[in-house]
Amino acid sequence: MSFERGLHCAVACRTVKRRSWIALPLFCLIGTFGVVHHAVANESLQIVDARVPAADKEGGDLPLTMTIKNEADSADVLLRVRCPVANFSERHIVDRGEGAPAMRSISNIPVPAKTTLELKRDGYHVMLLQLRQALAPGETFKCAVVFQKAGTIETEVQVQK
Image 1 (tube, rainbow, N blue to C red):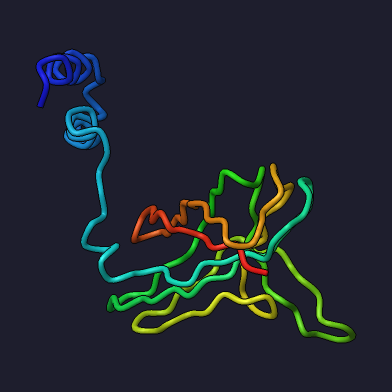
Image 2 (cartoon, rainbow, N blue to C red):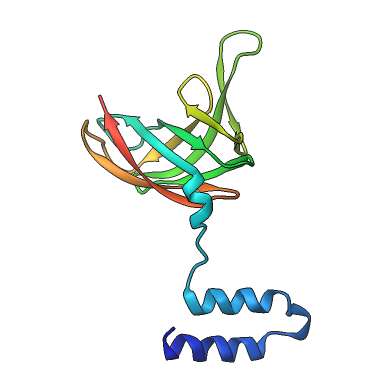
């Protein structure tokens, strides 16, 4: 721990009100070490084969597909995805109700315990919205995938034909 960080933590801890005594140790831990990591959870939850189709211009939307392996004893939830190549992302499911199948935005994607979940175009998937750049086949970029329990997992995404 650096002296400056320790000093900052000590000053901040003295200024926190008495009724916040429960949050105080966590605040000081984060202030001292920067970030709390979920290393154990990330070892039991893995993302493989993340991919998007190529895009010849910016401004469009693309489906991001991937395989999520959850070897944990408890279920998790995919909350959000942040990618530098898109302004936004949404979690979607393909609704096969009456009529033609349609994409529907959902708040999260459940990841059951002890299963492998494949996010694909005709089921659960993530849409990258308002691309910031064209994407050529063979390129790669990184995205941060945020889970409720496992935290943030950075994954490499492959651009395919």
